[in-house]
Image 1 (cartoon, rainbow, N blue to C red):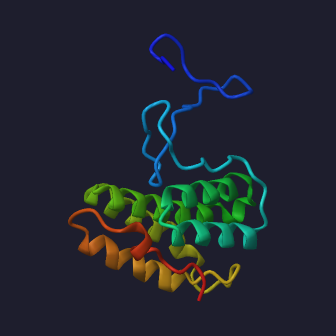
Image 2 (image 1 turned 45 degrees about the horizontal axis):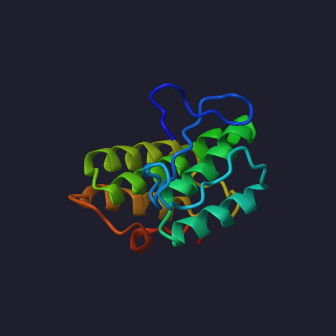
Length: 158
């Protein structure tokens, strides 16, 4: 599909890139075989969000996990937006690290830790915030080149 003359659009007419993507969310050429895209705007309970994101992280698909967290961030209560945003930032940080962008990965992991800090000590959906924050700090400190997203996937719950 040629896109130089017109943009890809979704059913509502919004600009939406229709190119297939790989497991780390990178666009592939039109017609290539890619990974199924994560549907957007899915309403999940917080527990369903954590389970689905963990499944995707375990599969080495942190970009897709970030999209699950983003749905919760956009649809959840205001009091939890920074929680889901921070978790999305950790997933995107791992995505960048797996793509070989050590500087960007470290920056996003650090931002995610900062976003999550306000929730430490508050039990939320079994999420192991101290453990996740320690994981993110440790990964950010040692990033030098691409990492294996599946091998580096964190455990969201304790």
